[in-house]
Image (cartoon, rainbow, N blue to C red):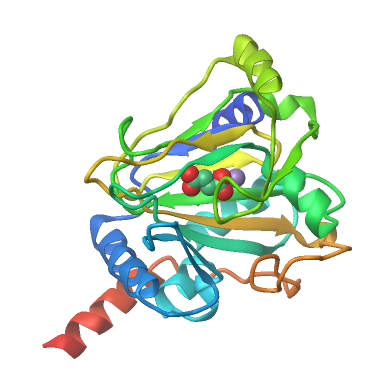
Length: 266
Ligand code: SIN
Ligand code: MN
């Protein structure tokens, strides 16, 4: 899948781009079922909220076939290759649950702030491309972005080890207020199958989910191969150290798996 020049210009201007209806209902149904199966696993990669509800499943592409295929899907790999102009490797992979009633906050942060400080990533030549597995609504803890905040480079941040189960370099309230005065806040919503990509320096966060509606989103963090991490401090399954360039699979790779599973069940 190729981005148009207008889409690329919008991404550079605002720091994010929404692509609706990128994956079909059938493809998303497969991924949603597989996410639920992954959350039931008792593995170190599956992190939980204080309530025990799932928070995030790291590295699901290494132990689940559907997520392996999604991690090499041409509809996700090609647009990011286009933006960076080179091949990519997988820096991080998360299936975030934002569980109904129990999904907790992600504080205001920049992703590249963490990749630079904790992983020794040289440049912000990595970004998240995400796929909505549930409907993302204004009420179920959507991602919130401060448009154009990616233009400020890496901002000062403090290491928050306590608010949630996931340590994060977070921005202070004064800085967030100043940025919001300039750029406002948007919360992109959309149907399951929507794709959202955003710059590594875009300031973002999300509130808790107290609704009965889960908000699962898969995040592939794709890094330009030349920008591989130099000083990893985190576990390999959080910040990967396999810098092999990703070769995309065929566009039908998820449809084929769904058909195989259906045939096996009959
Ligand atoms: C993230 O910022 O990495 C995740 C935020 C979310 O899923 O709400
Ligand atoms: Mn983030």
